[in-house]
Length: 249
Image (cartoon, rainbow, N blue to C red):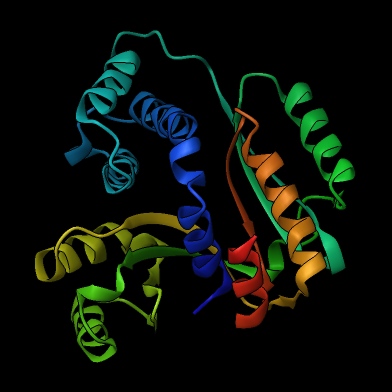
């Protein structure tokens, strides 16, 4: 399975998810509010809002929080945010994509650049690493949902493109424009997913050793700690041995 899923597993075991839950919910609220403001406040009539709500629910965000974020857009209280993507490099040249929503472009650019330089990376130009990724829909299920064959058959029936299965769980990939339909079909067959989102899937990866992985984790953690940053994606790959060592720290 892709290194990202193993990494998420380590973060969960270390309790990092609980520690940053409030910050995660805040990022979901921002995405929901902006999606509702840019389109129809009814998720059934707004694909972007529908996916934002679905992802928030998959991460156990309370319904009250979701409703409040939508009402903020309806009431005209939502801030004017700009979506900006930054691209750069981490240790050993690993590619990093940083997706942000900001009401101050200069502040965000300065903070992102500083975070890269302070944590073993450097900010590149737009397009410097984007060619190493494809925009895809991603739906994840826990390992106990079923075996690899069961998930593969369900994914094919739902119109997905690929499935990665391991002891850590199942990651189902589809075209970005098909995510809502695929995830809805999967949920009818398999139940609620662990996560449903649009993401950047690496087309090429960079192998990292333990030291480089530790540096990369510090960089990503620092970036994700910024309120303007919505999501960070990298193209790292690491051996099972390295991931096991990280899990033990």
